[in-house]
Each structure stands twice: as C-alpha cells, then as structure tokens.
Amino acid sequence: MSLIADYGFVLLVLACIFGFFMAWGVGANDVANAMGTSVGSRALTIKQAIFIAMIFEFCGAYLAGGEVTETIKNGIVDAEVITPDLLVLGMMSALLAAGTWLLIATSRGWPVSTTHSIVGAVIGFAAVGVSVDSVQWSAVGPIVASWVVTPVLSGAVAFGLFMTVQKLIIDTDSPFQNAKRFVPLYMFLTGFMVAIMTLTKGLKHIGLTLDSNQSLLLALGVGVLVMLLGIALLSRIKIDEEADKDFHYASVEKVFAVLMVFTACSMAFAHGANDVANAVGPLAAIVGVIQSGGDLTIGAKSAVPGWVLLLGAVGIVIGLATYGYKVIATITELTPSRGFAAELATATTVVGASAIGLPVSTTHTLVGAVLGIGIARGIGALNLGVIGSIFMSWLITLPAGAALSILFFFILRGIFL
Image (cartoon, rainbow, N blue to C red; front, top):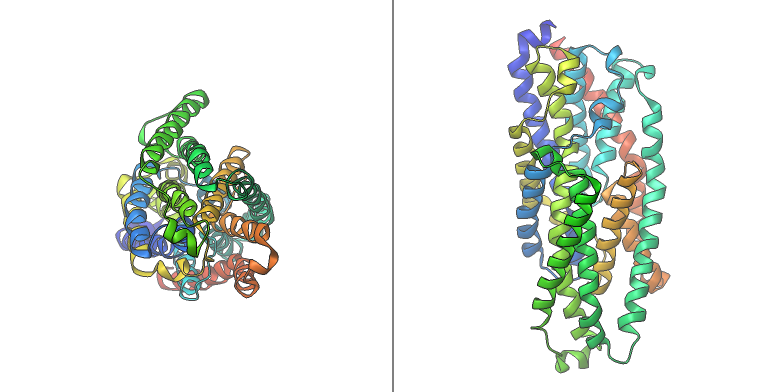
C-alpha cells in the first residue's frame, strides 16, 4: 500500500499519459475501420472522412462510451491474487505496451485489433508479474475464437448483401431507377442496425437505461428517420448521361455514395462508443484503485469518471487527425455499392456477436467483410499481398502486446518497487 500512498499522484499522471497514448493509437489505427471503406469507395475524401469521424467518434466516446469492458478490467486477472501496487503498475504497463504496438502497426499501415492488443498486454503482465495461474484462461478462449468466427461471418453477410445489390439493382434493365427504389431500404437497415448496437451497448452509462422493447422501437424510429432523410437527399440526384458513357453505373454509384455518408457517420459514433473502453478501461481501473487508497474491491466497482472518458475521446480524435491516414490507405479501393455492403455487414456482425456475448474485433470484422465482397467479385479482385500482411499482423498482435507489457512491467517495477 505504500506505493500508492507515496507515489499516488505521480502514478495517476503517468497513467493518464499512457491512457492518452493508447487512445491516440485507437484513433490512428482502429478508426480507419469506420472510415476506410468510405474513403476507399470515394464516397468521401480523406479530409471529409477525418472531419466526420472527429465529430462522431468524439460524441460516441464521450456520450456513450462509459461501458468499460469487464473482460479487460476484471475478467482476465484474478483480483484475489494480485496486490493493488502490482495491479496499478501492470495496467500502466498494459496501456503503454498496447499503445506502442499500435504505433508500430499504424506506421506500417496494418489494421490490427486494439482489443486484442490490450488483452494481450494485460495477459502478459499478469502471467509474468503475478503467476500463470492468475490469468483466467477461459476468458481468453472466446477472444481467440473470434479471430476466425467474426471475419468469416462478416464476409458471408457482406457477400450476401452485395449479391442482393447485384440482383435487385446492378443486373437489371433500369439500375438507376431500381437504386433509387431499393437504396432507402438499405438506409433503413443501416440506421436500425447501428442504432440497436449503440442503444444496447452504450447509453445506460449516461443514465438512459432502456429495455429490449424500448431499444427496438427507438432503433426502428432511427431507421425510419435515416430512410426519410436519405429519400430527401436522393431526390436531388439525376442521371448523369455523360458520366455513364465512361462507366455504365456512374449514376447508380452516386446513389450509393449518399448511403455511404450515413454508414460512415453511424459507424464512427458506434466505434467511439464501444472501442474507447480499450483505452479508458485500464485507466479507469488505475484511477479507481488510487482514489480508493488501494482498495481493489471499491476500485473495481467504481464508475468511470467523466474526465477519463473525455481524455479517451480527445486522444482518439487527435490520433485519427494526425496519423489515421496510414491505415485508411490500406483499405482496398471499393465502389460505394461495395463499401456500403462492407460497413453494413460489419455493423450487423458486431450486433449479432454482442447479443450472444462474443468478444469481437471491429478490425477483423471489417476486413472479413471486404474479403467477402472481393470473393463476390472474383478472387482476382483481391490483393493477396496486402491480405497476407494483415493476417500476419493479426497473429502477432496478442503476443506482441504481451511481450511489450512484460518488458514495461519490469521497468516500472524496478523504478517504483
């Protein structure tokens, strides 16, 4: 207990710096999941995507980001066999390690999982700093399983969505008219799926607790509003015969580009609401333990302070604005009709997985969706070199986070203990 009594303020300041660094990494690497497809499809420029993401990521993180992931905070390490001193130093090591790995991955344009980065880092310090038995390995199993399950599921959903676009719109005699007829339905589906994800995962931490029926009705209302707004915007789009001479579906893709703006805003908000926990979860655990004077029971139950969420939200926005373009550039070029299918498949998969309690990675989900669309177009449309480097970065993310966390844990323990 003397460590917290003697160095409490210093540890808190360092933890805030490390937490901000991790949030910066989430912004630089993970936000590309929400915006990369919109840029790849040319529905938005990189500047427009960054501007939209800065607004909606911040709103999502600050307003609805209070759900600290229990798996990260309390589920991986057995609190009964760890001291408050080691927990604080370990969580600081985990934040610094995950942030460092994200910086390395982002500099190379790899879209890695921030969730797996922080989970690997927490496992690393617990296994080495405390004991191998202190890690609750049963919590790690579903995370590893999600590496396979979510990309496959998302790819299948994206494949199916894109095939419906081809059948209902692309392969018809009047693709432009059919696009204006059916795209509002996709808009409704987009608004509904992202709303239900946000309502069921985030808003109870700002005092808005909804039951399943209320969430469903509100999500249906959001879907209808998005559809009506989309119909109003689509009414301004006319056939561009000149553009259609160069590319037969140019006018059709303009219709889908409007839809992509909605999916970009919605995904950014939902991402900010959910993935800010990767940065503020460990920080909130540290703050709780320090403010309780070293009482792990009180620290584990304490609510997330608003300023911690604000720190995470600001870090995400700055990370995106300063370095996010590196990973956005990795996402394959897509037309708006394909990009929409990728984003809606991602949202749908995350909603479904969350409903059954499966811990998923937005990164893995989105890449799986992009691959599904690539397969629908034919295997030749895939850049196998880029896919290979992405899969390699996935495999080494958890052990890389663990190794760095162990290194930083020994350094911090040497300094403070």
